[in-house]
Length: 226
Image (cartoon, rainbow, N blue to C red; front, side, top):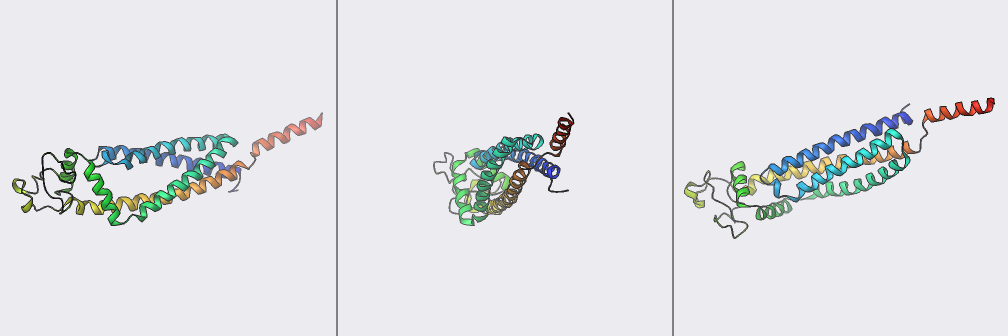
């Protein structure tokens, strides 16, 4: 019968195995992001990596609690999982609520913080030149953080007046918007699965193991026989 002890145990075990797989995916995405031109300088990459590691730890606690029906581990698992739901739900809603102007402000801040070599890699990868049309001047020293290196693939002889490539912001805008929506949607989905896992853990924690009950009944019969 689904909803009983065995069903709750199997459902909780399956959810925690799923969380472990998701955690490895998050860690893989973070490691891959650090190798990309912009990822190494984005603080969100470190946050994704931390979330992946934390999710592995809490999933292991839930998995052990589910297999052993450990009351203390299940209690802390429910508590931490509910707190994680609140944080993840808030972050997911914030990602979905970010508008184009806010995305551009974040991208501008990221562009100002990256090095000359990273800007060159971005310009080559996205076939663009400069951040936007207002900051399209080149310099070798990059004293202005919004300036950029030369674009030999876009501008003949480094002349930005005759440059035939679009600014990088126009190329990055769709990618950034898609990333925010994707992260927000996935985060929102998994935040609700954490509520389901907490409810199953609460139900499972208050259920009795039928094998233990059967063993207790046998012992009681043996006692009465004497």
